[in-house]
Length: 66
Image 1 (cartoon, one colour):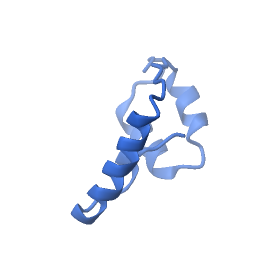
Image 2: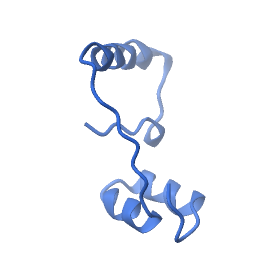
Image 3: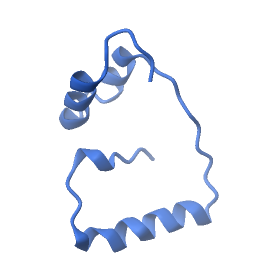
Image 4: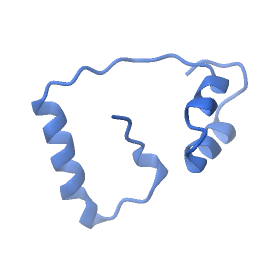
């Protein structure tokens, strides 16, 4: 599951929901892996998410790895 919290606004009312999601992830002992991708690959990965694409486009240098 890919969750992009910086892509939308979170209000104080949302914190209990987010906290429950995070607790369930911790309880499941899900593995987290660090991926290093080129900016072009990230833009392709998030091609349907306008806000994420805009963030990547404005904040990453072409040809760099993240």
